[in-house]
Image (tube, rainbow, N blue to C red; front, top):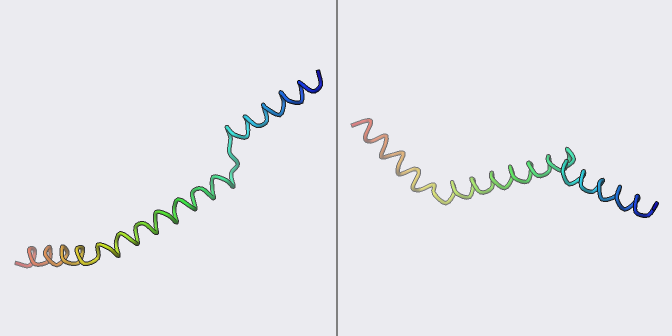
Amino acid sequence: MRLLDAIWFRLIDAALRLREEERGDSMINWLVLAIGLATAAAALIALLKPAIEKAGQNIVNIIGA
C-alpha cells in the first residue's frame, strides 16, 4: 500500500507543478518572447526602411503642398 501511496502522491505533485509553473520559468519565457519580437521588429524595419522613408516623404509633400 505504501508503494501505491508514493506513486499517487508523485502523480499529484507532478500535476500541480504542471498546473502552476514557477515564477522564474514564466519570466524566462516572457524575456525570450520580448527579445524575439524586438529582433523581428528590427529586421522588418531594416527591410522596409526605403519604403517607410518614401512614404514619409510623400506624406510631407502632400501636407506641404
